[in-house]
Each structure stands twice: as structure tokens, then as C-alpha cells.
Length: 284
Image (cartoon, rainbow, N blue to C red; front, side, top):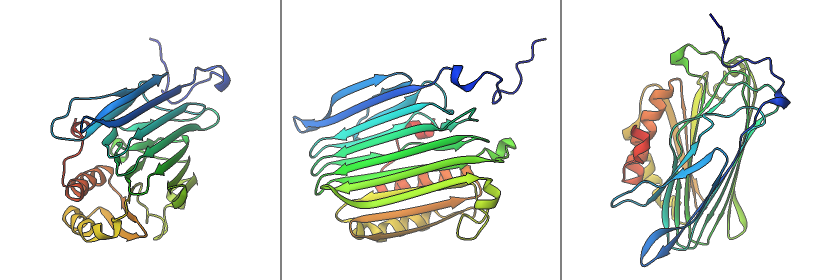
């Protein structure tokens, strides 16, 4: 019987293996009083689907048909919402970063939100597997009174599957500018063994799943009581969270020992905070 060996291992040289190079762009604008698709481009493994929605903002679903990322892969997503528009962008399922045989996978997100417009970036989780390497960069440019809500969730291995992360590299860089002025910058760099760099009380206290929500809006500070009430209603034993706001920003952090509990907490929190259900793909 032929034995293919572990899926995460290969004797093929990294420079001879096919690599992902996907690019997807979507732009929405207001026409006839409704937010409508204005431009769509996709190449490689990066795809965008536009499901029918009723009584909800226009929604775009991002898909990586490669099924995951490994060293040398490249994915770029470019999203724009024109003046006074409102759109939601999510992902079909969790993104996965697999064992790298050389170099890092790179994911780039670019966002442009026009005056009076709203963009909700609500992808599902990113799962980092053992020996994976992922570098991600998120850049956003907002109009003077635009609103951008960004969520990202990271899971270090699937503990329910008995997976153990011995080493991982993850670098995440966020930059948000309003009218050209930098208003939010956030950098995360994880390199090594999670049991070591996440062991401290200030770095996760042993938790292997975490999420960040940034709501960038001129009235962000007014939303703080709602965010705290929604967080209290979503509270659970395994997931810890906190939220604060200042200068047109509201930032919520979540950390958990149980990725499923974190997901359920996020669903409850976002449903309450947004006063709306999440895109249907979140419940598939």
C-alpha cells in the first residue's frame, strides 16, 4: 500500500513547489440610493463571491481556493467603499497557515472608505499550524467621517484535535489613517514556542486564541457603554476581554484558552454591539 506520509511534510525543495499568488479587488459605490458593486477583479486563488442579502448591507465573501497558505504564498485583498456606502467583507471559512518549507506566507489587505461610508471587515479565524510562518499587513485610508470596523482572530493550533505548536512565526501590522493622518498603529510579532511567549499574565497567561476588534469612527467614544454592555452579555469562563476608546477609536481585545468559546463569545458580542447578525457564512 502506498503511504503518502504526513500532509505537512515534504522532501520536495521549496523553490520547486507551486506557490499561491492571489489578488482580489472589490469596490462598492452608492447609486440610486443603494450601495452597489462598482468593480470586481480576481486572479489566482483569491476569489470573491457576492451572496444575495435582504435588508442587510452589501456583503462580499473572500475565498482562498488553495485551501490554505504556506511559505512563499501571496494573497492580496483590496476593498473600497465609496462615499455614503455600507458594505461587509467576510471570509468563507477560517484561513489556515500550514508548515513552511521556506520563507513566510504574506497576506496584504488594503481598505479605502469614503466620506460618510462604513466598511465592516469581519473575516473568520486565522489558524496557525506547527512550524507555520505568516506575515500580514493591513492598511486603511478613511474619509473624514468614515467608519471602519475591523476584526481579526488568531488561533495557535487546534487543541481539540490534539495539535501541539512547537514553533510558529506570525507578524501582524495594522495601520489606519484618517484624511492621511495616522490614527491607529498596532504590531504583533510571535516567534518561537507559544508555551513560552504566551505564558506570562500580560501575554495571554497560556491562552492560544485571541482576537482584536477596532472600530474607527468619529463617535467611537460614545459607543463605549454599548461595547461594555455587549461584552458583559457575551462573557464566558474561558474567554477574557476588555475594551477602551479614545480619539475616534474603540478597541476591544479578547483572549481565550478555548477557540470555540472565543468564537461563540465574538458572535454574541458582535451581534449585540452591531445590533445585527453576522454574515451567514459564520454559521455554516
